Image 1 (cartoon, rainbow, N blue to C red):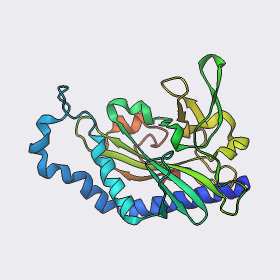
Image 2: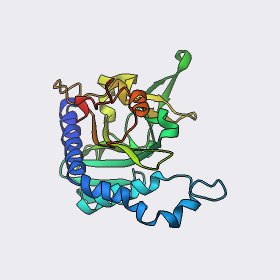
Image 3: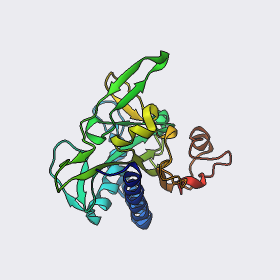
Image 4: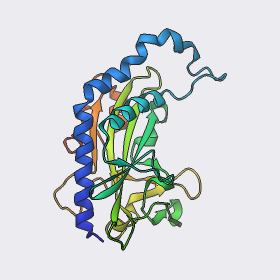
Length: 254
């Protein structure tokens, strides 16, 4: 098994790899996001009609990011069905990478936390609810795969979060986040988890554990890879965890 420090070193290492890759392909990513405009007349009348029309535009943005990540071929894909949307093995870890999409009509879903599924993280811990009630959260992923064997490797969880504008259907912000491995509950405790909308479900409370604290280098667990140059002041004012009073992305996320 690894020390807590060694786990955070790996989480930080791969967060940076994903961040630099998404910055490297930013031009291709923006071109992909804008590709819908070429054929807008073919789909605009079907979008969000409420009568069988498309209600989730963000899936198009997901498609672009997934195609770029898949083309890079990070590590070796693994067929384990209990996993995030992308699951692969690298030399020193198994990595789960999931896409999260939020629209500005539901912007509260990215203000301080994001929903996480049981197949996307290994963080067993307490969820402290309103009123002080405590619920034990138990996800499906292990802290290590092949624990105790020569093939033992730590399990890491990352999320690419895409914020799209509900009115214009433009992508407003893309970020990559590292959720602590379950062993780090020894350090972070209940700060990592918030209650989901349903019993037994959880959210990653990134605003309360946004640094690799054990490394003690002020490195952030969150990196923002793209901000729409036309993002509105209303959006940046609401997302004051990410942006300062002037609408500028805070330095720790770049």
